[in-house]
Image (cartoon, rainbow, N blue to C red):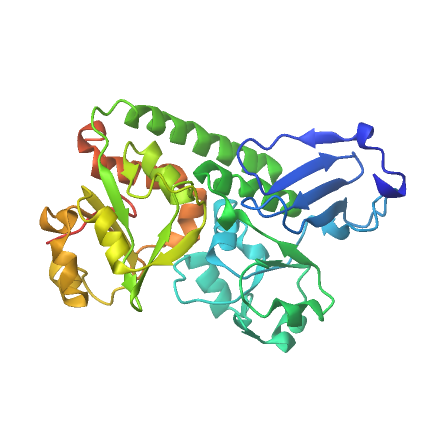
Length: 354
């Protein structure tokens, strides 16, 4: 290590599932490295977590110093906020970018009481508001288009949060440990993650007992194209763990891409189930689907009324599910194999009403 840091003195903090961050503990400080979980050759971001008021020697020059515990944070996405919600630490959030699908009562109250501010939308942030709320750090997702170059000029520490790029459901949830290190809430985070992991693996083992593995299509047409994710993606892993087969399971991509209707139809018209997530204004039904595109009625899952649905207007999907993969998994198992969870009431996904 540069600047005299001796790697032999470090204790590596165990991270079991997440691929996007690693931690070395030197006692007086911690060095955290963040990179794209889907691209090991991508840029790596370096942070030195230092107890507030301390200035230990030996921190490499390329590491951004972050004083902990962090007291004031700006969150740019619901996924980032989900960690604070799970840790009962929403009071640390002093700024958020969008409230389109905001459900959390505590954050809504903070907005009403002016303890949390809206900083604008991606690509059009209000730098004056950001400076006025004086955050210790701003959580960012640099691979998204959001005008972050302008924020860099504010001189505030930007902390790269890439949990959304994890392909493993437990890997995404494990970013709660990353957030907890900044907030000084590691004991709570470890306890919560251990409970998530235990329940998730119990459900995964339960689903493995299913004798049949139904096939699943996902998504809808938007602007003439269909957004799909590859067979190594987060969603594909969820379907597999729920005892089903994603219709593009043989694709080796872990990210998402657009394909035309014909491609989806040729591969997904005969799947047993169809997963849909949208923000429909009103009650989304099979008739509403048909009105969106009459070709939907040709799909087997439509004909047999096996569309698994979540409406973003009524469910806190984005602000909760990143740290509730075990709940999402239970929802999917209930849909695919209802006999395995006979008394379970779905939370986010359920078979769409007629």
